[in-house]
Length: 376
Image (cartoon, rainbow, N blue to C red; front, side, top):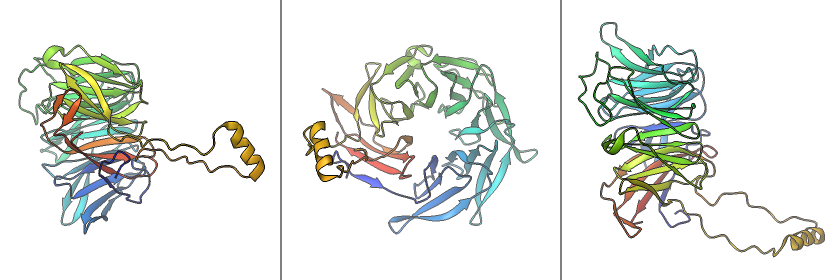
Protein backbone atom coordinates (compact mmCIF):
# COMPACT_ATOMS: atom_id res chain seq x y z
CA UNK A 1 0.00 0.00 0.00
CA UNK A 2 1.15 3.55 -0.68
CA UNK A 3 1.06 6.31 1.90
CA UNK A 4 -2.28 7.41 0.42
CA UNK A 5 -3.84 3.96 0.85
CA UNK A 6 -3.61 3.06 -2.86
CA UNK A 7 -2.67 -0.57 -3.67
CA UNK A 8 0.70 -0.71 -5.42
CA UNK A 9 2.61 -3.50 -7.14
CA UNK A 10 6.29 -3.10 -6.33
CA UNK A 11 9.01 -5.04 -8.15
CA UNK A 12 12.79 -4.99 -7.86
CA UNK A 13 14.56 -6.67 -10.77
CA UNK A 14 17.95 -6.43 -9.09
CA UNK A 15 19.83 -5.24 -12.18
CA UNK A 16 20.54 -1.60 -11.32
CA UNK A 17 18.98 1.75 -12.27
CA UNK A 18 16.48 1.27 -15.10
CA UNK A 19 16.67 3.71 -18.02
CA UNK A 20 14.07 2.24 -20.41
CA UNK A 21 11.57 -0.59 -20.58
CA UNK A 22 8.93 -2.12 -22.88
CA UNK A 23 6.10 -4.64 -22.46
CA UNK A 24 5.05 -7.46 -24.76
CA UNK A 25 1.46 -7.74 -26.00
CA UNK A 26 -0.10 -9.66 -23.09
CA UNK A 27 2.12 -8.03 -20.41
CA UNK A 28 3.55 -11.41 -19.42
CA UNK A 29 7.07 -10.29 -20.38
CA UNK A 30 9.03 -7.07 -19.98
CA UNK A 31 12.28 -5.90 -21.53
CA UNK A 32 14.40 -3.54 -19.43
CA UNK A 33 17.82 -1.96 -19.69
CA UNK A 34 19.78 -0.79 -16.68
CA UNK A 35 22.24 1.85 -17.87
CA UNK A 36 24.28 -0.78 -19.69
CA UNK A 37 24.64 -2.36 -23.12
CA UNK A 38 22.45 -5.30 -22.09
CA UNK A 39 18.71 -5.79 -22.49
CA UNK A 40 17.13 -8.10 -19.92
CA UNK A 41 13.85 -9.86 -20.67
CA UNK A 42 11.81 -11.03 -17.68
CA UNK A 43 8.76 -13.28 -17.66
CA UNK A 44 6.05 -13.46 -14.99
CA UNK A 45 6.16 -16.98 -13.57
CA UNK A 46 4.72 -18.32 -10.33
CA UNK A 47 4.02 -14.86 -8.95
CA UNK A 48 7.46 -13.38 -9.66
CA UNK A 49 9.57 -11.96 -12.50
CA UNK A 50 12.22 -14.38 -13.76
CA UNK A 51 15.01 -13.54 -16.19
CA UNK A 52 14.74 -15.61 -19.39
CA UNK A 53 16.90 -13.78 -21.96
CA UNK A 54 19.78 -11.31 -22.04
CA UNK A 55 20.41 -9.43 -25.29
CA UNK A 56 23.90 -7.95 -25.55
CA UNK A 57 24.50 -6.93 -29.17
CA UNK A 58 25.03 -3.25 -28.34
CA UNK A 59 28.47 -1.92 -27.34
CA UNK A 60 27.38 1.09 -25.26
CA UNK A 61 24.42 1.81 -22.93
CA UNK A 62 20.96 1.24 -24.41
CA UNK A 63 18.93 4.46 -24.63
CA UNK A 64 15.62 3.27 -26.09
CA UNK A 65 13.38 0.19 -26.28
CA UNK A 66 10.04 -0.59 -27.89
CA UNK A 67 8.23 -3.92 -28.20
CA UNK A 68 5.82 -4.32 -31.11
CA UNK A 69 2.52 -5.87 -30.06
CA UNK A 70 1.55 -6.83 -33.63
CA UNK A 71 4.81 -8.41 -34.81
CA UNK A 72 6.37 -9.34 -31.44
CA UNK A 73 9.61 -7.64 -32.51
CA UNK A 74 11.79 -5.54 -30.24
CA UNK A 75 13.61 -2.47 -31.51
CA UNK A 76 16.50 -1.02 -29.50
CA UNK A 77 18.88 1.91 -29.88
CA UNK A 78 22.04 2.84 -28.06
CA UNK A 79 24.80 5.35 -27.50
CA UNK A 80 26.86 3.24 -29.94
CA UNK A 81 24.94 5.01 -32.80
CA UNK A 82 23.20 1.79 -33.79
CA UNK A 83 19.71 0.33 -33.73
CA UNK A 84 18.70 -3.34 -33.84
CA UNK A 85 15.46 -5.11 -34.63
CA UNK A 86 15.14 -8.30 -32.57
CA UNK A 87 13.04 -11.20 -33.88
CA UNK A 88 12.13 -14.20 -31.71
CA UNK A 89 12.86 -17.44 -33.57
CA UNK A 90 13.31 -20.93 -32.11
CA UNK A 91 13.56 -19.62 -28.56
CA UNK A 92 16.33 -17.16 -29.53
CA UNK A 93 16.19 -13.40 -30.08
CA UNK A 94 18.00 -12.71 -33.36
CA UNK A 95 19.24 -9.16 -34.06
CA UNK A 96 19.12 -7.35 -37.40
CA UNK A 97 21.26 -4.24 -37.80
CA UNK A 98 19.49 -1.10 -39.02
CA UNK A 99 21.15 1.45 -41.31
CA UNK A 100 20.27 4.52 -39.25
CA UNK A 101 23.25 6.56 -40.57
CA UNK A 102 24.07 8.41 -37.33
CA UNK A 103 27.35 10.07 -36.34
CA UNK A 104 26.08 10.71 -32.80
CA UNK A 105 24.38 8.60 -30.16
CA UNK A 106 20.83 7.35 -30.72
CA UNK A 107 18.52 8.68 -28.02
CA UNK A 108 14.98 7.34 -28.51
CA UNK A 109 13.11 4.76 -30.60
CA UNK A 110 9.42 4.10 -31.28
CA UNK A 111 7.49 1.67 -33.48
CA UNK A 112 4.75 3.13 -35.68
CA UNK A 113 1.18 1.96 -34.91
CA UNK A 114 1.20 -0.52 -37.83
CA UNK A 115 4.77 -1.59 -36.97
CA UNK A 116 5.88 -1.45 -40.59
CA UNK A 117 8.42 1.25 -39.69
CA UNK A 118 9.93 2.96 -36.66
CA UNK A 119 11.58 6.27 -35.83
CA UNK A 120 14.92 6.79 -34.09
CA UNK A 121 16.06 10.11 -32.63
CA UNK A 122 19.70 11.06 -32.15
CA UNK A 123 22.19 13.61 -30.92
CA UNK A 124 22.98 14.42 -34.55
CA UNK A 125 19.95 16.76 -34.72
CA UNK A 126 17.92 14.43 -36.91
CA UNK A 127 15.37 11.63 -36.93
CA UNK A 128 15.73 8.43 -38.97
CA UNK A 129 12.48 6.81 -40.13
CA UNK A 130 13.37 3.17 -40.76
CA UNK A 131 11.52 0.56 -42.80
CA UNK A 132 12.24 -2.90 -44.20
CA UNK A 133 13.38 -3.00 -47.82
CA UNK A 134 12.08 -6.23 -49.28
CA UNK A 135 14.36 -6.22 -52.33
CA UNK A 136 17.59 -6.23 -50.31
CA UNK A 137 16.22 -7.79 -47.11
CA UNK A 138 17.50 -5.16 -44.70
CA UNK A 139 16.33 -2.18 -42.66
CA UNK A 140 17.01 1.18 -44.32
CA UNK A 141 16.15 4.74 -43.30
CA UNK A 142 15.07 8.16 -44.47
CA UNK A 143 16.10 11.17 -42.41
CA UNK A 144 14.28 14.25 -41.15
CA UNK A 145 16.84 17.00 -40.50
CA UNK A 146 15.57 20.55 -40.88
CA UNK A 147 14.67 22.58 -38.88
CA UNK A 148 15.83 20.54 -35.83
CA UNK A 149 18.69 22.43 -34.13
CA UNK A 150 19.64 20.19 -31.21
CA UNK A 151 19.50 16.67 -29.78
CA UNK A 152 16.22 14.81 -30.29
CA UNK A 153 14.96 13.66 -26.89
CA UNK A 154 11.59 12.03 -27.61
CA UNK A 155 9.20 10.82 -30.32
CA UNK A 156 5.60 9.72 -30.67
CA UNK A 157 3.50 8.48 -33.59
CA UNK A 158 0.07 9.69 -34.58
CA UNK A 159 -2.52 6.85 -34.85
CA UNK A 160 -2.65 7.40 -38.64
CA UNK A 161 0.88 5.91 -38.92
CA UNK A 162 2.14 8.99 -40.79
CA UNK A 163 2.52 11.99 -38.48
CA UNK A 164 5.44 12.03 -36.03
CA UNK A 165 5.82 14.32 -33.01
CA UNK A 166 9.43 15.22 -32.16
CA UNK A 167 10.76 16.89 -29.01
CA UNK A 168 14.30 18.25 -28.82
CA UNK A 169 16.76 20.29 -26.78
CA UNK A 170 16.26 23.42 -28.88
CA UNK A 171 13.17 24.24 -26.73
CA UNK A 172 10.75 23.16 -29.46
CA UNK A 173 8.25 20.43 -30.16
CA UNK A 174 7.44 19.74 -33.80
CA UNK A 175 5.03 17.59 -35.79
CA UNK A 176 6.44 16.16 -39.03
CA UNK A 177 5.08 14.00 -41.80
CA UNK A 178 6.87 10.63 -41.86
CA UNK A 179 5.05 9.30 -44.91
CA UNK A 180 7.12 6.59 -46.65
CA UNK A 181 5.64 5.67 -50.00
CA UNK A 182 7.36 2.27 -49.98
CA UNK A 183 5.29 1.04 -47.02
CA UNK A 184 2.46 3.56 -46.46
CA UNK A 185 -0.80 4.24 -48.21
CA UNK A 186 -1.35 7.83 -49.26
CA UNK A 187 -2.56 9.70 -46.15
CA UNK A 188 -5.90 11.46 -46.14
CA UNK A 189 -6.26 15.09 -44.94
CA UNK A 190 -6.71 15.55 -41.19
CA UNK A 191 -6.81 18.46 -38.70
CA UNK A 192 -2.99 18.61 -38.65
CA UNK A 193 -2.70 19.33 -42.37
CA UNK A 194 -3.70 18.52 -45.94
CA UNK A 195 -0.52 17.62 -47.86
CA UNK A 196 1.98 15.39 -46.10
CA UNK A 197 5.12 14.58 -48.12
CA UNK A 198 8.00 13.03 -46.18
CA UNK A 199 9.73 15.49 -43.86
CA UNK A 200 7.02 18.17 -44.14
CA UNK A 201 6.86 20.34 -40.99
CA UNK A 202 3.19 20.43 -39.98
CA UNK A 203 3.44 22.38 -36.69
CA UNK A 204 6.09 23.88 -34.42
CA UNK A 205 5.74 24.95 -30.78
CA UNK A 206 8.15 26.87 -28.54
CA UNK A 207 8.50 26.19 -24.80
CA UNK A 208 10.79 27.46 -22.05
CA UNK A 209 13.03 24.40 -21.75
CA UNK A 210 14.19 21.30 -23.55
CA UNK A 211 11.33 18.92 -24.28
CA UNK A 212 11.47 15.69 -22.26
CA UNK A 213 8.51 13.72 -23.61
CA UNK A 214 5.72 14.09 -26.16
CA UNK A 215 2.50 12.09 -26.62
CA UNK A 216 -0.50 12.01 -28.95
CA UNK A 217 -3.93 11.29 -27.48
CA UNK A 218 -5.71 8.03 -28.47
CA UNK A 219 -7.59 9.83 -31.27
CA UNK A 220 -4.51 11.72 -32.45
CA UNK A 221 -6.36 15.05 -32.31
CA UNK A 222 -4.56 16.20 -29.17
CA UNK A 223 -0.88 16.49 -28.34
CA UNK A 224 0.75 16.88 -24.93
CA UNK A 225 4.40 17.45 -24.09
CA UNK A 226 6.44 18.29 -21.00
CA UNK A 227 9.59 20.40 -20.79
CA UNK A 228 12.28 21.31 -18.29
CA UNK A 229 10.57 24.56 -17.25
CA UNK A 230 8.07 22.52 -15.17
CA UNK A 231 5.30 23.10 -17.71
CA UNK A 232 2.78 20.83 -19.41
CA UNK A 233 1.80 21.90 -22.93
CA UNK A 234 -1.37 20.96 -24.76
CA UNK A 235 -2.50 21.29 -28.39
CA UNK A 236 -5.96 20.50 -29.76
CA UNK A 237 -5.84 20.24 -33.55
CA UNK A 238 -9.66 20.32 -33.77
CA UNK A 239 -9.53 23.89 -32.45
CA UNK A 240 -6.22 25.19 -33.84
CA UNK A 241 -3.22 22.99 -34.61
CA UNK A 242 -0.91 26.03 -34.42
CA UNK A 243 -2.01 27.19 -30.95
CA UNK A 244 -0.48 25.71 -27.80
CA UNK A 245 -1.55 26.00 -24.17
CA UNK A 246 1.36 26.13 -21.70
CA UNK A 247 0.41 25.25 -18.13
CA UNK A 248 3.13 26.24 -15.66
CA UNK A 249 3.14 24.17 -12.47
CA UNK A 250 4.70 24.44 -9.01
CA UNK A 251 6.27 21.01 -9.36
CA UNK A 252 9.81 20.04 -10.26
CA UNK A 253 10.28 19.37 -14.00
CA UNK A 254 8.36 16.49 -15.54
CA UNK A 255 10.26 13.92 -17.60
CA UNK A 256 7.39 11.84 -19.01
CA UNK A 257 3.76 12.18 -20.10
CA UNK A 258 1.12 9.65 -21.13
CA UNK A 259 -2.52 9.97 -22.23
CA UNK A 260 -4.84 7.68 -20.25
CA UNK A 261 -8.08 8.67 -21.97
CA UNK A 262 -8.89 11.33 -24.55
CA UNK A 263 -9.41 13.83 -21.72
CA UNK A 264 -6.94 12.72 -19.06
CA UNK A 265 -3.15 12.68 -19.01
CA UNK A 266 -0.56 11.57 -16.45
CA UNK A 267 2.84 13.18 -16.02
CA UNK A 268 5.77 12.33 -13.74
CA UNK A 269 9.34 13.40 -13.17
CA UNK A 270 11.66 14.89 -10.57
CA UNK A 271 8.91 15.15 -7.94
CA UNK A 272 8.94 11.33 -7.80
CA UNK A 273 5.15 11.16 -8.03
CA UNK A 274 2.74 10.87 -10.98
CA UNK A 275 0.39 13.84 -11.44
CA UNK A 276 -3.05 13.67 -13.09
CA UNK A 277 -4.29 16.38 -15.48
CA UNK A 278 -7.64 16.59 -17.29
CA UNK A 279 -9.00 18.59 -20.20
CA UNK A 280 -12.17 20.47 -19.22
CA UNK A 281 -13.88 22.80 -21.69
CA UNK A 282 -10.81 22.63 -23.95
CA UNK A 283 -8.51 23.77 -21.12
CA UNK A 284 -5.85 21.61 -19.44
CA UNK A 285 -6.17 21.58 -15.64
CA UNK A 286 -4.20 19.89 -12.86
CA UNK A 287 -6.15 17.52 -10.66
CA UNK A 288 -3.89 15.93 -8.06
CA UNK A 289 -0.79 13.91 -7.30
CA UNK A 290 -1.40 10.18 -7.50
CA UNK A 291 1.15 9.32 -4.82
CA UNK A 292 0.16 11.52 -1.88
CA UNK A 293 2.82 11.65 0.88
CA UNK A 294 1.69 10.79 4.39
CA UNK A 295 1.38 13.54 6.96
CA UNK A 296 4.66 14.51 8.55
CA UNK A 297 5.16 13.19 12.06
CA UNK A 298 5.84 15.70 14.80
CA UNK A 299 9.47 15.86 15.83
CA UNK A 300 10.59 15.23 19.37
CA UNK A 301 12.95 18.16 19.07
CA UNK A 302 11.14 21.47 19.61
CA UNK A 303 13.78 23.83 18.33
CA UNK A 304 17.23 24.08 16.82
CA UNK A 305 18.56 25.24 20.17
CA UNK A 306 17.18 22.15 21.89
CA UNK A 307 18.72 19.97 19.16
CA UNK A 308 22.19 21.37 19.84
CA UNK A 309 21.69 20.99 23.59
CA UNK A 310 20.85 17.32 23.11
CA UNK A 311 23.92 16.82 20.94
CA UNK A 312 26.13 18.51 23.51
CA UNK A 313 24.63 16.57 26.41
CA UNK A 314 24.43 13.13 24.82
CA UNK A 315 27.40 13.50 22.46
CA UNK A 316 25.24 12.07 19.71
CA UNK A 317 23.14 13.47 16.93
CA UNK A 318 19.59 12.50 16.23
CA UNK A 319 19.35 10.10 13.29
CA UNK A 320 18.18 11.86 10.14
CA UNK A 321 15.79 10.04 7.83
CA UNK A 322 16.62 11.01 4.25
CA UNK A 323 14.01 8.74 2.62
CA UNK A 324 11.34 10.47 0.56
CA UNK A 325 7.70 10.06 1.51
CA UNK A 326 6.83 8.97 -2.03
CA UNK A 327 7.08 5.40 -3.29
CA UNK A 328 9.80 6.30 -5.79
CA UNK A 329 13.01 7.49 -4.18
CA UNK A 330 14.34 9.22 -7.28
CA UNK A 331 12.93 10.81 -10.41
CA UNK A 332 10.49 8.82 -12.53
CA UNK A 333 11.86 8.39 -16.04
CA UNK A 334 8.98 6.63 -17.77
CA UNK A 335 5.25 5.99 -17.49
CA UNK A 336 3.60 3.26 -19.54
CA UNK A 337 -0.17 2.87 -19.66
CA UNK A 338 -1.15 -0.76 -19.34
CA UNK A 339 -4.90 -0.65 -18.88
CA UNK A 340 -7.44 2.13 -18.53
CA UNK A 341 -11.18 2.54 -18.46
CA UNK A 342 -12.34 5.14 -20.95
CA UNK A 343 -15.19 6.31 -18.70
CA UNK A 344 -13.69 9.25 -16.78
CA UNK A 345 -16.35 11.49 -15.28
CA UNK A 346 -15.63 14.89 -13.80
CA UNK A 347 -18.12 16.62 -11.52
CA UNK A 348 -17.42 19.18 -8.79
CA UNK A 349 -13.80 18.08 -8.58
CA UNK A 350 -14.90 14.52 -7.86
CA UNK A 351 -13.38 11.88 -10.09
CA UNK A 352 -14.70 8.38 -10.29
CA UNK A 353 -14.74 5.31 -12.52
CA UNK A 354 -11.04 5.86 -13.22
CA UNK A 355 -8.94 2.73 -13.20
CA UNK A 356 -5.34 3.20 -14.19
CA UNK A 357 -2.35 0.90 -14.28
CA UNK A 358 0.95 2.54 -15.15
CA UNK A 359 4.53 1.39 -15.26
CA UNK A 360 7.05 3.76 -13.72
CA UNK A 361 10.80 3.63 -13.42
CA UNK A 362 12.92 4.99 -10.60
CA UNK A 363 16.54 5.79 -11.33
CA UNK A 364 17.87 5.11 -7.87
CA UNK A 365 16.29 1.84 -6.84
CA UNK A 366 15.34 0.47 -10.26
CA UNK A 367 11.97 -0.62 -8.93
CA UNK A 368 9.26 -0.50 -11.61
CA UNK A 369 5.89 -0.01 -9.97
CA UNK A 370 2.33 -0.73 -11.04
CA UNK A 371 0.05 1.95 -9.64
CA UNK A 372 -3.64 1.02 -9.49
CA UNK A 373 -6.06 3.87 -8.84
CA UNK A 374 -9.75 3.31 -8.44
CA UNK A 375 -12.49 5.66 -7.33
CA UNK A 376 -10.45 8.84 -6.81
